[in-house]
Image (cartoon, rainbow, N blue to C red; front, side):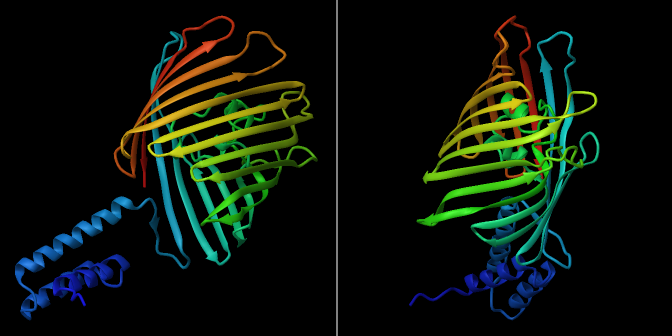
Length: 376
């Protein structure tokens, strides 16, 4: 039987103490000093143990992406800031920098099966982004109540800090309660109740993820402005490792664009695909939507590859949108070329060049974007 050396026994013991916060750091130092005084270890061995502990602690810090706070209940605090610089080809626009997002995210567990989330953005004004309560009954059933992301579209549901491109596609911005939607920019969120879960486990992974919800349809931090409730649903199949195939549906009536405001149809359909095979990634999505009497559609295809493992990623994106399928010469196409550099788990730098093309009169309106993201 293999005998563990005294050095390794002490190292394991001290790492357990330091990583689980049973004792303060100085207590570990005192323990090592005491072992030296008792002639159980030599000074060289003590220095080696200290170096091993310091390396272990540093590795744990670098691998973290959330911090725990001391409270009466388990609590996690995280967040990020995105500082962006834009250079416009159009002469009537001014180049400049802005703080695009400043997010603070608090998540906690009240008691099983209850947990909550509160996310606030401080960028232009203080704005509550997420505020909801989860009840997880089983893997196949979770109930979420409050202000949350609408279960529609892969890119809409992706976290802002995880996007491979700096901007979302045109059709997602126009048809998922974001910057170009008829109801205004609500960060892809609404107030309501959602049922979600995973089904059919096979070889340690689920074959289906689903989400169904009823929402006000008026957006974040806003009371309902009509008598109808909007329905949204998304289902994603995982037929093989690394491959996701999904679809989304949204149906509602919302008030906008007329005086006095009146309810108008707001309907959307979507199909999505994601394929991940390191170091490659491939994403594609198509969405069609109806706002009142106007039908819109569009889609994108995006490919990425890590040139340097987990450090340097190249990205290409084709993005096309038609704001009115009954109109003429109004399609807009954007070709995006990007480089993402990951300093570590906490810092990411992105560069995108957007070649923009109009179907009718071509405008010199390309954009160079730089974005630095710092997380904690």
